[in-house]
Length: 541
Image (cartoon, rainbow, N blue to C red; front, side, top):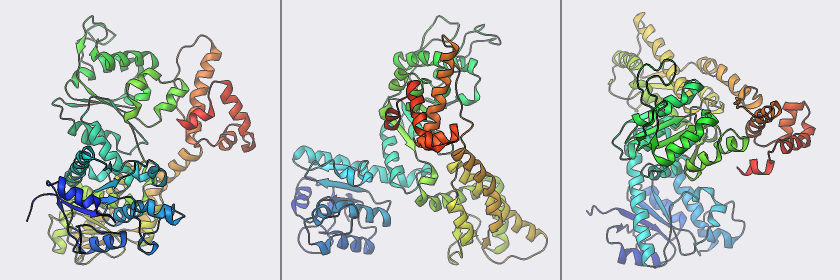
């Protein structure tokens, strides 16, 4: 058998199969046994063949346009006419493949440079696309296929897969981070608390950057404002009260490595200019010192709020934002926007919880008591678990799982991890207590108490409702201004931008919150204009 990567071509024509067979000897075109060139001519046959041969291809090459009779086309809700259904049939096939085989790499093919594909299906924006027109495009196809294979290999090996899930949005972010990790440009990670920004900075950027230096974390939310410059850039002895010796800043500590600056929006405006110069000149000058120290650092910054909105509010310098490179900005979606990932995350996190020292001891004790191997992972199942599945299994009754599925998860993956940790702890402790009381256990399935789920979620649900519906705790920064009125406007702009973002630009809700009358949205817009905020610009950003 050949060890060359196997390509499955889904295409109603013969042009691609002939070109690939003639010019891409590094790959093997899978022959589905349908007669004629090695290809599958339509979506229904392709799905049927993949069901019967799920491991027979390493990469799928998928054409976009299919000039076929209507009966041989898959449904596509966005295509209301037969012509558009044929034109974008590849979208329907891609979605069907993603639903059934989410790990299977797909490279799209088209002979027409049609960017309107992205208007029909947003998932195509981050999908590998190759315009096969001449020899140069065949080189591009080789690169796309290699990239798809590499991405699939990383997915199988990457322990941080617990954060990636199965949603197309996260798969696109994964591919993008794999590229950004290898360059010198800074990377911006935005997203709510608990979405995994620090974890990805280390595992998806630093670990793949090829850098030999350390990964250094600087969490600005834990550092007093007056100490931020010394923490970032270092300080010479006597530079400030308490500086009894020379101190290296995090830029020096991260030399030849990666510096992760969390909550970058907390950098005071007067320090932002210094940070800009360090990024620009790749040199730091410690406080109280006349020397400059060269630094070679990959910078990753994170924020739980939009930096573009902070620029609009006047709390973040536009030139620093541009130096951080908005083109590299990645926004991690909250867990509530990825319901298809919840069960995947819950099962992966449950297995990880079972490997921890304190839970692992309980797990092994119960396994030994019921006569099953202790080296199998802790499993999570909904309703009755499969009796043939190996390992100790926590069984969530259907209503308890629905309660988890309906929870808004304000703390995102971090909160889910803690909930799973508590579910495992309470359930296993209950089983161990029963064993120590002399009660026998015979089943490898332990049912989780539904009341426990309600108790664990009650407090976080209240926090989430307060956060989303009554955003009263919006942080602002104070910076010296020429007049008290300027200070007031400076603070009001920050608050208005944050409120606008919190309410997704709904002026009626802002008016209800500020004035107690949702009919006064026009007054809110007028006030925003008066203090220099344009609603249109905020919505665009």
